[in-house]
Length: 196
Image 1 (tube, rainbow, N blue to C red):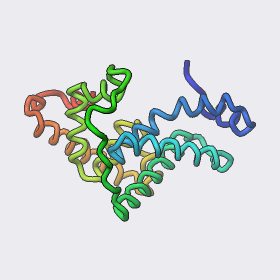
Image 2 (image 1 turned 90 degrees about the vertical axis):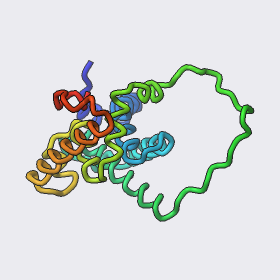
Image 3 (image 1 turned 45 degrees about the vertical axis):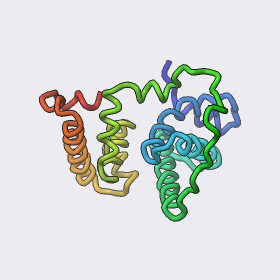
Image 4 (image 1 turned 60 degrees about the vertical axis):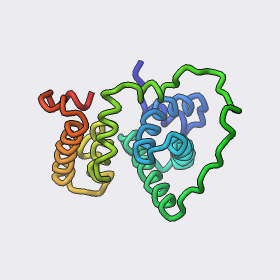
């Protein structure tokens, strides 16, 4: 069942709590994934995801346009950049260690995040993605992972479309080189193989 985001937004503006829950469910995976790729830690991404939806809820009346998901992802990106700046200004204190063996988890089954990490091809691409510079990584995240159109990325970043196109191409080439450097068996494979 496809969801009509503009209809959900209008229902949310009218005060429909069920529409808000559905809107969050539709968008939270993409928001979390983008936050995780920017911040690199599950806990930080979860916190940012919650904060983004608070901000979206507060600013819902100020949203006007057709690209709701682009608007939400722009808020997410900006919030992540703010988090990274704060992290650099004030590095986190070291965590206290819990006594070994004192704490046990009730369920030993892997969660979805652990199952994803276990997939070797995705892990390879993720490792290669982490090696990219910030500009190239951002292009891959926005275009290939989030699926945004080049024009939407250009608008989001405030860049000319031609610049975004060339950066996107350079980022894909650099990612492919990193994948091959990590696993030379990918050298002869078609370009689409590393993105799947």
